[in-house]
Length: 340
Image (cartoon, rainbow, N blue to C red; front, side):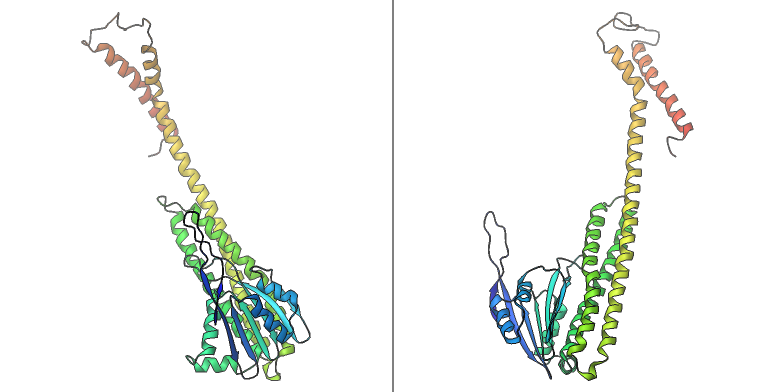
């Protein structure tokens, strides 16, 4: 075990700090093969294995790239494959994509990743220790192809858990969509983004797992014919994830449209109310405007009316403002513009 460094920028004013990230190389001896698991490896570590197992230099470049498109290269004595999986996050279950590079031959299995795929890290720990002896014997007691199936299987099961979290988030958003006191547009946009990101991971994954199932037969023992059935089960799980994502995507579109309609309706109600208030205030505004002019008008300062007392003209102006407003209100009510 050794220390490697990955530049993580921690912004503190204008300063940035490089945080050390643990680099691990675990070599685990199985009954018929050797599993080498590299987490956050240096280039020299991968190049040493490349010399030992005769890996293609282009594949080494792909391993060291943080993000490479999924691919599968087949050679006479091994094959190389890159798969993408989402490491879990606290809210939606998805964050950035995590790349898993795999070299598989008859007597070796090499996995290269950044250490953020928790199920894979846990499998490596089980194989290094005796915490679960029965599981350890199952993982290491057969072929390298069987172990690769177990790795992909636990990672795909993790995808199933992620899809269930998305469904839980959909249920929460459904409650918020119909609650006018809670804004939901941002939550919808974020979850739509995560669903689309997961779809971009899962759709290629199915194709490459099928390719792995075909290529792995060349490096399996005669007693591993059931591997085909095992990989068929993995494909079924991936299909379930894809189906869940498609349904979630359609549901999100419905929620988006519903939220837009409800928001538009709410806005129209507010605008309608403000328009009615402004309309009812028009008579008083017009009268106030006329009598605010510096000109002689009936009932002005020079022609005060007193048949209702000293405030006669004030009372007349108030009535002239209120009566038209009451008449308009009654008319709008009759037309149905003002609800109950």
